[in-house]
Image 1 (tube, rainbow, N blue to C red):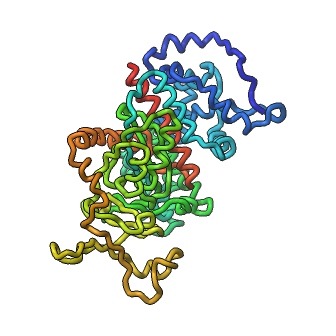
Image 2: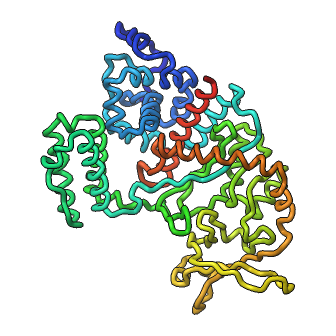
Length: 483
């Protein structure tokens, strides 16, 4: 049952908030900027209105998740901080003497109350509405790009995960007291899982029995992360499984296992639309969705700035139909040509290769044909035929018994002539200078808001993490511009 809303809390200690929390504190400014009542309105249907035990306030639970993202903390640590940090209690709408929730409540809130809620679009829409109301968004330009997020498993085995996290824990300990190198339990040197789990348990027990080192925040946070990984591994090795994550490519040699978040951002660095997909999805096909979501959120899109991944034939046609200037350079291989079956094969600009509908990337490419002989040259991309033999999408794409599978792109054609002329104009070059801004935004999401690695498993959880990270980034940006 939902708690009764609108009841005033009184405490003789509430004066501490005015005495100790500065007016320019980030959490105070966020509370002043946005009315979180919209969270209750959205989640009301998830609770029984008049029966059952009184639930934790959904607005407060959501704020816990926001704090967790802003300060990059685990469930245990964000609750622990809210026990003694008055700025946290003020933000959460608590009195100084109020007790905190059990950390397990946050897990239940995510699984039960946020399930089937389109949190990503809802939170972006809310912040874009504030930005428009404050007059912060002033143009119809959006800058688009995709950022990579590694799966929580990424895709290491249980032994690798424990070794990585115990290593981070030891580094935190040594940075405080190097003499602990001689006191800590001897680390496991083999790849036997039972040995590594025993070592992990021993290391955690050692720190719990030595609170002078184990309770130091930098050490305690790493210890909690290691303990969470150990619990996951004990629970059927969940850390090595992520069924929705896929292998994508940052470059021809650099692959990752995880997800992609496709982002549309204004020049004022406010994110106005986003979609989350598995790591193998191309950037270009998501452009149409980003444009539609940007318009739904109140942005009149008239310019799109992106890289070569967005210069596909379908995107050019969409931009022309909607009278939008598409500032995206054509790939050199198709700057005078077209791509056959373009709706099937997608170009990965990071790797410089085409990706087939099943997500397999070409393994090499070759230029074929002679110049200036009246016949167009082609760039041919070759795929791993062994993968084609067992591919579920091979029908109509791969013929049984064929020793190779290739995909060719015409290099010389006037299909993209108009886009080429625009690409050489001074306006194109001027607008293209805005693209660097989204690289900085991607770095902020990863390095400041912990978006470099998934916190849980599955696409829905990745969307939830992305929603709160983008919500926090937008709030911080709006506050900075207002200041």
